[in-house]
View 1 (cartoon, rainbow, N blue to C red):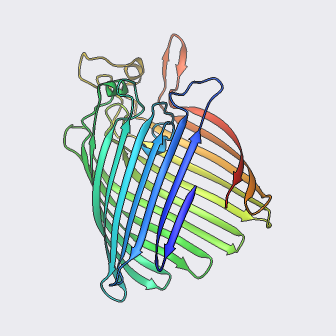
View 2: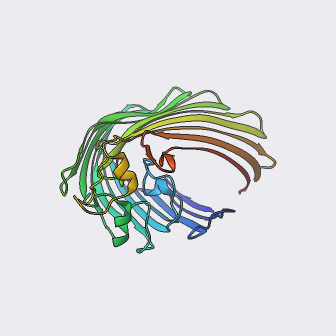
View 3: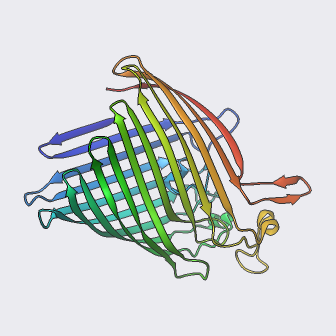
Length: 362
């Protein structure tokens, strides 16, 4: 449910969402998820623009909200996430715009005495953005961003069997093109360098290249091709690893065949790589560990994720549509171990998912 109130060159938007989820053979700790998103954008007298965004989610299984790199694949503990973004841009010359921005992001799991898929954390950040116009529809953009992240561990986090001294600071410098070329080509392509410094432990720190690319080609009005590429480092809750790098690519086709019928098809491939080999003594020599870590110590984890998806849709009226979605996901991790019960591959699976939707909107 969304409400938008435009006025002059500004607007205010409020989006509300609710989801109920249940399984036939599995009991969730909570069946309810809801979100509130507030966005405000308004212009000021000197040509500047101020933005304010607030994203709040009370979720259960939305793991990408607290682990956007997809290390964790399943969650069953309710959590709250609140993210606030502030920004201000002002022209400094006819071609150049300078911007300032700040962020605050917090994640809290609501059950302190249950094993959770991730730990609580707070993140505070900010940075500078410089944009130089190359044409009326495109610009060269550079950003410098700083983020400080602080885990807020609870006793139940010991069941994660990971080192919790993962307070870090991150610097990221990105530069690249964004906008449109002619009428058929649009998007962005940015590359840069990032560092993640962990001061409270002696395990690996990230220091390397990052990229964020999203390009769209629309040769005709009703057909579009999208290509998305990326590489980024994320904080990790696996064994003694401070972080992992996610390198991904996605290719997608979309077509509005007629006034009533449309379809989408795409493929995603992603690799998550970890810098540290598995250790059995996560908490120190002689302290508790898991059978998995004891039998996989010395292995360097790497997950390869493939996802094939498609959608068929039919607009019955302007307000009502029917959609059929299919997704196949194959996650292949090199972590495996053997015991008296056979071979165990805890991070490898294949999933087929079919979703039927009826959508009503005004």
